[in-house]
Image 1: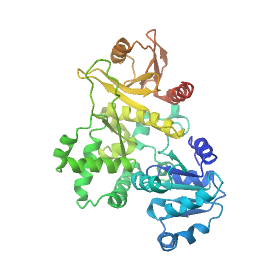
Image 2: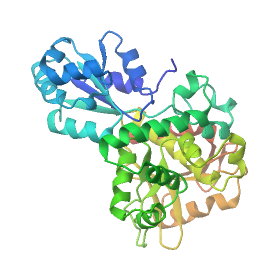
Image 3: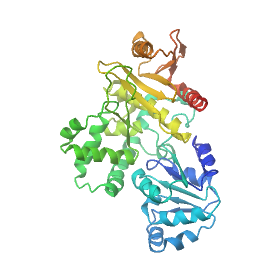
Image 4: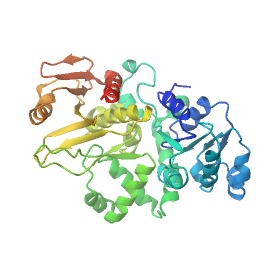
Length: 393
């Protein structure tokens, strides 16, 4: 088993709350992590039809099988259990009694908010970060971006092209239909591919609706479905305007670059080098690693971007509450003066100096203008520093 960075946060939460919900996309390792950390607890999957039938017909009897708690996998498949869990947790002083997992955030949170609010902690588990794998310095960046980070790709002899094709098919057939009665699967799959083509771009719902061939309301609904299933996320613009007119539209990213590559029709890592979205996919990769560093520590997402109406833009703003930390992301391997142009503008309007450029090269630099240039291989150490700064702010 590849050690997950979220393990420490999971153990800490289980020592404080009576239950912990591990949420994340399908095949992100939720079951493996929960069974490893809580090896002494019984494991039950609600994906099993017989188990699900028992839980539906006699939820109280089902739960009394586990006087010391259990790991309940894909529990959103049987929402009637949540009301009975509430009583059990209220009557028990034991922390970490039940560990529940789910790949459908919308259904899971809807049931938790009704029955278990205040009794349960959340941990979002995404696919591997690049730094949970062995020695990122020895790995080819384009290979990583193309392959993606879902655990089955690292313990099964399967090609990414084949695995992602089946993942999308399974996702559409199962998860999407649980949330929305989507009858035209071809249209929805075209929508998925159009979203991949907008990776790192402002999300214009109207334009997406026109290209997909559906109305704006449907696009809004489908985006919510993708977000609830941890396929895509929207990076929100930061609200500080510094007396400038700023963009208020979110940017669209995928949680996994491998899935985005698959939807774009990229067949191998070599094609990434000259692909028109290579820069956007590298940006997606870096932002994804920052998101994972937050979630692995059971922390909320504090990432934004900033853009004014004349084109000045900061790729990532990390909001520490009392200060904003800007990061520029560049897919080139040679540092040029252009890398610092937007950061210089940011420093001029905010009066704040520290900033970072993350790029695809291999040399770390400390510039006299207060900007640190770091290669992608050292992104993990930078995120660790940012998290530590956040804790002491």
